[in-house]
Amino acid sequence: MESGKKNIPDIQEVSKWVEEFSEGMITHSFYKTRNKEIAEDLVQETFLSAIKNLEQFRFESQPKTWLYSILNNKIKDYHRSTFNNKSNIPLSDSFFGDDGHWEVSETPSKWDIQEDNLLDDEYFIKIFTSCKEKLPEKWFSVIHLKYQENKSPTEICQELEISSSNYWQIIHRVKLNLRKCLDIHWFSK
Amino acid sequence: MKKLQVSCEKATVLIEQQLSGLPSTGMRQIRLALHYKICSGCLHYYRQSKVIDTLLKKTSKESQSEVAFNKEKLLLSIRDLMDKK
Image 1 (tube, rainbow over the protein chains, first blue to last red):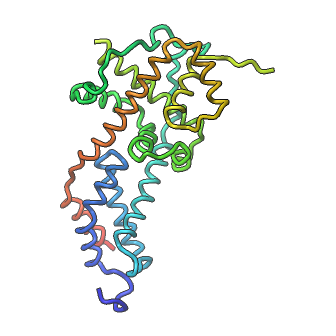
Image 2 (image 1 turned 180 degrees about the horizontal axis):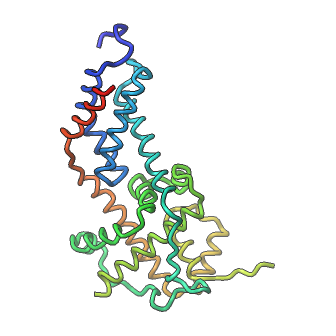
């Protein structure tokens, strides 16, 4: 690109960006959303936004940086909307009685495990993954940010615009539900 | 004076906060000890929750390698968008 000759990228320039960056952007987006279709949609939306706002792009900045900043904003919007559009956190009161103590049938008992072996057991991981997939969709944003992005509770609350108590409630429910699911489908068998 | 009602539910929330690495203040430690003491099953819960943490980390990392997409389809749709513009 000859500097000073062009101030706004043209369609051919954007086509090059698509060729060069879309694959990495979809991988990045998938990594952050866990959903292939959504990842592709977000990248499409990113290019659409970029095309609409080409005049904002300056050639002294890197197109990749610019595109990824648009994409990251789209991913944040996606997490926020996923979180806010769903109904309130379902109450899984069945774990505890009115006094806050374990219901008899829910009281954790010992898992007979050798952790190292278990984590390498493909069938067990498959069971765990299917347990995870049964969790309400709105919890996934929290799980993703905590376990995949290693974000702190404060950062997650800020990003998803949720209260600290809401956050702990979700983490607590995630664990209770996964524990129960593994109990039923693996450890009790 | 407000009476502290100890419960397994509160113990498990405090366990989660501890496992998440929330700074362990003296007050939180005392609360956890009080709730934990009366909670049968909470020791198992603590151990199992740690296993689930490991599993969540492991499966989150593995899911990254699952991506496979139709790049041509995406390129076509993006080019279509650009043509419309």
